Image 1: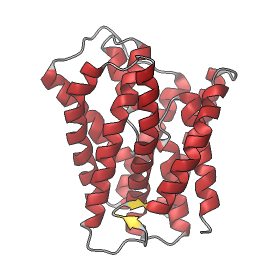
Image 2: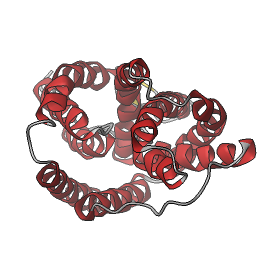
Image 3: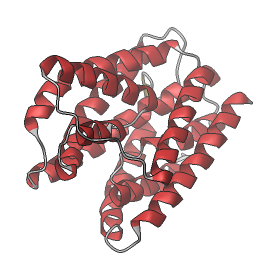
Image 4: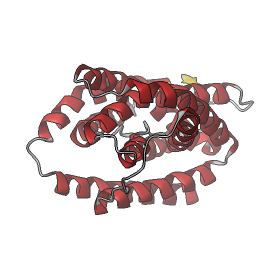
Amino acid sequence: MEAWPVYLLTGSAVGFFAGLLGIGGGLLMVPILASVFMSLGFPADHILHIALGTTTAIITLTAISSLRAHHAHGAVNWWIVRYITPGIIAGALAGSTLAGQLSSRLLGIIFVLFIYFAATQMWLNLKPGTGHVLPGKTGMFAAGSVIGALSSLVAIGGGLLTVPFLSACQVRLHHAIGTAAAVGFPVALASAAGYAINGLLLAQPLPDYALGYIYLPALITVGLASTVTAPLGARAAHVLPAVLLRKIFAGLLYLLGTKLLLDLWN
């Protein structure tokens, strides 16, 4: 019960930034939840696994509303979704299974490296080169597998990887974002399923109210709070300067990533 205010604040912040910047919020949630789970005395060897699994489950909830909104605006390319999703599911299941075999410290290093990469990309506003074309069915499966595996390992909805991939293949940015939002649902769902199954197969006992590596009190509380504040962030996006917001968010990612790294190392 003492952690519920933190869950509410985390969900509120994640929802606001998700609406503001069009991100899933996983990069914010994982280090914050990991710190909370440390304070609650969760098993040290599985703290990051539970933070990653819980985050992917939360993203599953938020991805549904995002998918519906972009579909209503005609921004989803369903051909891409159809042919990239099998690879997404295979990659996400493989990524979550791999995560279950890694130590919490190694998994944390991988996450922190990715969070630094994402923060740097956002700070410098780096964009991929264009001029490529969408691959065929086999290529879409391969691309989906890579996106799904990496997204599962670091608990993101896949937008940070899917949008640059589609933009490089000359998909209009509006449709790239909408399609990435649609792809985010199978990414998060398959990742959450993988973390739940791998946690249930674990011989070592996990905390009460955990479904495998998914901690249900945090899932419910953070998920509900984020759905309330996401519309506020979306409205603020039309008022506040985008460049400043990206730099503030990137700076926050650097701080959270560094704190997580120090916590895991100690």
